[in-house]
Every structure is written in structure tokens, then in C-alpha cells.
Image 1 (cartoon, one colour):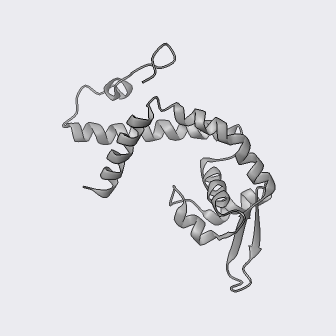
Image 2 (cartoon, rainbow, N blue to C red):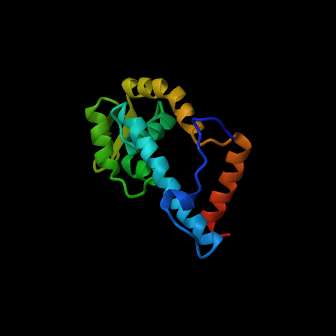
Length: 159
């Protein structure tokens, strides 16, 4: 864990001014929701510097994973972290910013194939080191991160 003046340990009770919780499970649920919001706000501020939203960044990373190939907007939506996002609109915005390109699928003209542009690849390359710094703001080491991942997977799987 980090220590020193830049890292302050505040309990969830203090963050939301809650005296007590019904159970540790209720506390964990509220802590997850609060922490998720805190983390999303950090990411929004970070991506704003690059003129992106977190959802646009997510799509760019999906496209980079397909590079040099392309991917349909339906497949992009299936892979996105935020399942409520409008993948088509995000792709349109990335295309306007010249970070992605769209081509009508020759086999089915109703579908669009999307690929990352050279500008999009260059942007992600510039962001890579800073993303690592953002990840380090979690204030946990690799072993703790692995334990947290196991617990979060368990929460989502209900077992």
C-alpha cells in the first residue's frame, strides 16, 4: 500500500457519513457502488484531457485489439464495458475525430466494419504510459489486485 501525504485512508463510513451498516455485505455493496463511481470520475477526468470519453477509449482499445483487421459495431457493443452505450454513435464520433474508419460490409450492406486509424493507434500509444499511472492510483499492489479480481469475479458470478 502507498503511504504518505498523497494517500489518505478514509473508510466508507466517513466518506458517506454513515454511522453503521446492517451487515458487512451491505457495507461491501455500498462500498463497491461508491468506489465504482469514484473510479469512473477519475477516468472521465483523465480521458477529457485527450478529448475522449471512457466509452470512446474502450472502443478504441477494442479496435486496437482487432488491428489490422476490422470489427462490426454489433461485436464492438458485445465487447464494451458499458453495455448501455450506443456503439454506433461512439464509432461515428471516433470517425469524425479521425481515430476510426468505417466501411460498409460487402457481404451485408446493412453492416459496417470498423477499424482503428493510424491517428487512433498513435493516440493510444501516447496514452499507454499514462494509463499505467492511472491504474496505479488504485493504491494496491499486484498481489492485492489479483485478490480483488478474484473477489469481484465471485461477486458477479454469485458464488
